[in-house]
Image 1: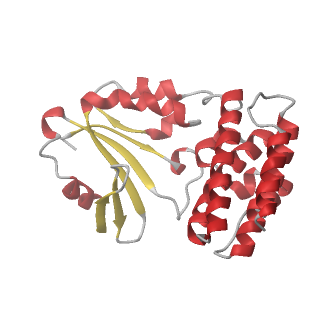
Image 2: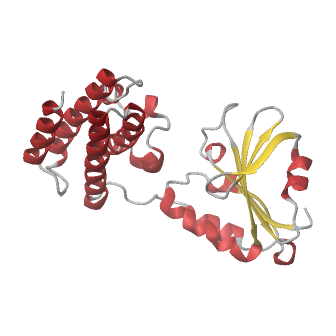
Image 3: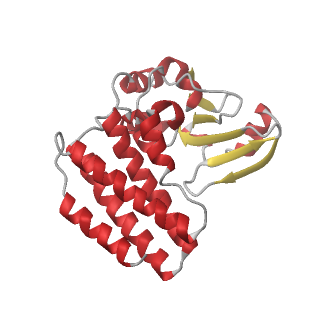
Length: 252
C-alpha cells in the first residue's frame, strides 16, 4: 500500500444492494511520482488470482477474478482526487462512509462528504423533454430500418426506445434515482402496471414482434404525454404522435 495514497469503493455494495452477483468497483489514487511506472496487474494479483485483465471502451480497467467475480478499477494520481466530487451528478450516495477505505492525503473524506444528501434533480422539464425527443429519434430510426428489412439494427434501436420510455415511466412513478441506469432493480422499482407496459415493448429478432413492440411503445408514450403534460413542458404533442401512428400503420 506504500504507493497508494487513497482508496474508495463505489457501486452496489455502498448502496446496500450488493450480493454474490455484484461487481467490485474501486478508485485507487497513487503517489504522483509512481503513476507512470505503476503495474496494475501486480497490485490486482495481490488481491486475488484473476483470469482476465483489460481496458473496456470507457478506459476502465476490468478484471475477471478466478472465481468469476468481475471488478472495475480506476488508477489515478493523487492530484486527481477531486474527481470524486464529479460523482454528485450521477446519482444518490446514501452511505458515503462505506465508500471510504483508506486515505493518507486528508482529502478523501471532504470529497465523500460532498456527495452526501440528495442527488441531482431528475424530474425537470429539461429531462422530460430530453427523454421524449430522444424517444422519437430512436423510435423513428428503428421503424425505418425495420421497414427496410434490417431487423437486427431495428432491435438495437428498440433498446434505446426502451431506455427513454423507462425514464419517463420513472418520472411518472417518482423512482428517478436510477435515471442513468433505468433497468436496474426495475422489477422492484416499478408498479406492476408500469412493468407490464415495459414488457410490451420488448421483442426477439422477429419482424412481427418488432413492429408490435414499436407500436406498443408509441401507445405508452402517448399515454405518458397525456399524463405528464399537466406538470411538464415538452416539445412533442398528441398531434405529432398521431403522425407517428400513421407512419407505422402505412408500412404494416
